[in-house]
Image 1: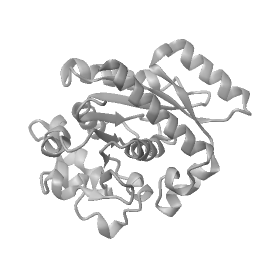
Image 2: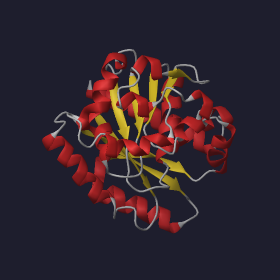
Image 3: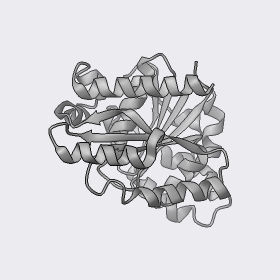
Length: 260
């Protein structure tokens, strides 16, 4: 059993930490578990859209036009090739939204307001945030119930986390009191590398139960899958990356069940 219409923002202001990969493949794994899932590509790079095989000509209705009020959520939603998984794609114009929305009332709540009419059709709405802490990410945090943070197993992993946690705390205090941490998932783990193990241990020591047991390994098949417009679970179900995202989805669902 899941809580109805849980919205999870997947956020980290650092690039290259596996944020979009986690968004696409966690959404796919949840859909494979029988949940109805909507993935909102909220990164101007549009990599989540590419990762689900949504080509540029198919993105006329998109997250940029959604938050500027040009289209409604139901019009922006596209069916993906993954059963049970829909997507609102992104285009590069989304990068201009921070400037365009700066003087608009309730600018931090544009995404939350836009998603309201459609979110009840889904068990989970996953928002792939841009690699920044600007207005787009604040919009995602204001729309979300929970935040999931991908954290790369590298030397400076914890350095940027404090800034992100401050932003989450600010949003909780001033804009979205119901926002809470879903958890932190360690990504790009290399079991052959002592540094990966050391970073994982340090993160668990500092953050305890916030850190998922599941770790996402470095895996060539995970890196290859987006170039074929597929989540890794469709590209190669049996690879270690796919199995890790299935385990992460199972852990998240169990977490929700225990909280219910």
